[in-house]
Amino acid sequence: MSFSSDVKEELFNLYDGNRHCNIAELSAILLTCGEFAYDMENAYIKIQSENKYAVLKCHNLIKMLFGCKCEVFVRSSGENRKNRLYFVAVSKKESVFNILNATGIIEDGIVLKKVNSVIVGSTCCKRAFIRGAFISEGSLCNPEKNYHLEFVESSLETAEVIKKIINSFSVESKVVKRKKHFIVYIKEGEQIVELLNIMSAHKALLNLENVRIIKDVRNNVNRIVNCETANLNKIVLASVKQREEIEYIQKTVGLSYLPEQLEEVALIRLQYPDLSLKELGEMLVPPVGKSGVNHRLKKIITIAENLREEIML
Image (tube, rainbow, N blue to C red):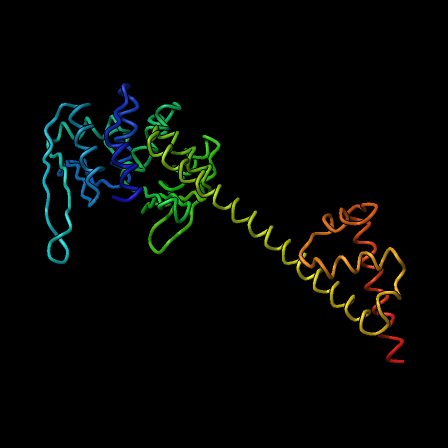
């Protein structure tokens, strides 16, 4: 199973103790992946999806909240009939009216098909609504690869409402159009963790946090290793440059040409090419600090450069 499916399974098994929160969750599922009608000729509710969790959660909520009979069936589809389509339907007019009226989808007998502000008026109901929307239209990338959570909506109005509800919890979501759909998305790992907490997907939250910790540790180790490697490269290049200049002086005029303090440093650098400046300084008599050794080596390099210029002239 994918990480996204794990989250949906966890949310599927979560049922709120408050009737109004369950209604808000049902409203989100009906609005995001439902088909319904209520007029003089037709009265029905139908949920059709390859996402079994959305269909079965819708069925369970309708049965629990309204006690009415739902038709549930499964069909095979696609190549080799491996894919499954899940259906739940309510066709009794009285039951359809009760469900659509309670979820705020109809008002005064007119199908509005938009989020009713009363249904998501309280904080707990907002959480439930987000939960229902994610079960039906949400997805979450494997955090090992990327941090990306999204809701795929067919209606810009619904997408904007979901965005507004999510952002009311100080989580920054955005809407973008992708082909014929409108995508509400979050890309920051910390923000995704917060949304999982809002939806009460605590198991998924802990799993995601574990992945984030491991990735952060791995990234920190890589940064430290890269930094150490860069420092070692600088030390090696500096040491090579120093030895080249000392050897040049030795071949042209001899190291005795150097002042006594510089000659001492030059001899030790030739003898110990891999030592750090600090270690070189500790071998001098009397010992000299890192900056003192660096200063003397720079003087040696300057002397070598001056010798080259004199020879060229």
